[in-house]
Length: 436
Length: 154
Image (cartoon, rainbow over all chains, first blue to last red; front, side):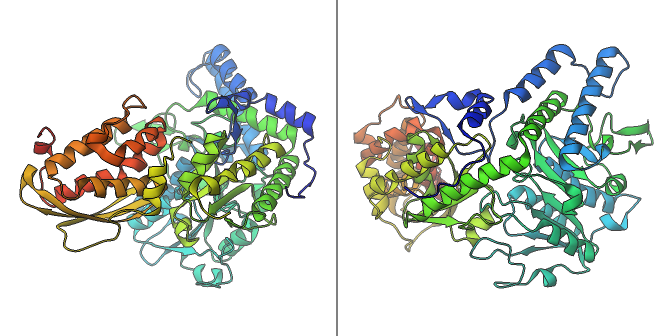
C-alpha cells in the first residue's frame, strides 16, 4: 500500500457521527457487499437533517408560499425566505440575490435566456445585449450544463461562441500553449465568460478571481458553475468577483428539485424573466404585464418550498461542520487516492496528478479496458463509481479518452473506502487479461 | 463475474469481421449518449425484402467489451443469412437481454449470443449489448429493406 498517511481532519469518531446522518451508507449492494459510495459528484447522499426539515415543513407548515394571507401561508413563506437567507449567508451574498431554481442547469439557462430575452425585449440593457459580432466565451472543460445553453444562446442571437482550451495536465490553457491564450480570447467583443469553478471530471480548481477580473476588465459578465465547489469548499461570491454563480442542492447533501442562482443585484434587476406565469408579476392586464423585482421575477409558479428548506438544513449542517474542514478532509483523501493510483502504472489519471488546486473528483482510465468494464468490476465489489463522459464529452475528446471512470468524494468518505476502491481496481487487469 | 463470459472477452479482444469494407448499401453511426460508446456500421445486402441476403456487415466499434463483443457476434451470426433470419436472431437477442435474467437464450437461434445472457441482470448494460443490433436494423432500413414485414417470417 501507499505511504500516504496524511492525517484526515475528521477522526474516526467524527466520521462515524457524520456517516450516522446518512442511513443509506449502511446498506449493502450486490449480494451483501458493503456500499462504498464514490459518486457524490453526480449526486451526494442526503443528510437526515435535510430530509427531516422537508418532512417537518410538509407535516406542520405546508401552504402556498407568497400567496394568500392566512397563517399557514405566512409561516410557509417565512420558512421559505429563511431558507433563502441561509443560502445567501453561505455564499456571502445578499438575500435578494438568491434565486431558487430546479437545479443548476436551470440556473445557467436562466442567465443564458436572460441575455436573449433582453435582446428580444424592449428595454435592452447594454450589459445583456448580444448579437452578431459579439462573443460568448466558455471553456473546453465545461459540463454540458454550462456549454449547451451558451451554444444555444449563440445560435439564437448570432453571437460567436469561443472557448479556452485545456492543457494535457488538465488545466485551463490560459497562456495559450496549445491554442489562443486567454488574452486573445477575452476581448471587448466578449459579452459573457462562463466557466466552472471545479471541473466535475478533472477535479481542477480554476483561478476564479483571475478569470472574473479578466472578464470585468473587458466589460464582460462572468458566470460561475459552482456545482462542484459549493459542496466542497468555502464559497464567497464577493471574494470570487463573479457576476453569477449556479449550484444544485442534490450535490450538497440536500434534495433534488432545488437549485440556486446567485446573481449580482443590479444585474438581476436589469434581467428579463426566463419562465413566466404566476407570482413573478407586478401587474397583469390583458394588454401586458410588468414583472416583480428579483428574486420573485425568476420564480414563476409554485416553488419547491420544502426542498428549498431541506437544502437550507443541509447547508446549516455543512456550516456547523465547517467548510474549511470538509475541504481539508477531502483533500487528504484525494491525495491518498492519487498516491494509490500512481502506484498502478496501468492507470492513467485524467486531470492533475497532485493535490494542488484540485478538488476531489478523480477520473482515470485503465490501459486497454473501457471505463464501463472497469466500473462493472468495481460495482461487483460494492464500489459505486461513475463511468462514461460525465456530461463533459468535448473534454473527454480533448483528453483523448472515450470514457473515464470517476471516483468523487464527500465529507462522509472514509480512508477505508478510498483503499477499497484501490483494492477493487486491482481485479480489473485480471478479469480482462491486460498487463498490470 | 458471470457477466464477463470467456466468449465475450474473446470477441471483444478479437472482434470478428471488424473494419469497414466495400461494397455497402448503407452506413450508420450509432452512439450510446450516456457513456460515449460509438459504432459505425455498414451493411451489404443482395436481393429484396425478407429474402434479401446479408452479404457483409462491417463495422468500427469504439466502446466497452460488451458493445464490441456484441457487434462481433452480430456479424458472425448474421453474415450469409437472410434478412428474415437475421430479424429472428435480433428479436431473440432483444428478448433475452430485456428479460431481466428470465430468458437464458436459445443457442440454436442466437449462437454465441447466449454468452450475453448475464447482461440482462445489469439494466445499465443492456444498451451496450444492443448498440450494434440497433445500428444493424437502422442500416437495413437505410438500405431500403423493410424489416417490419420480415419479423414474423420463418
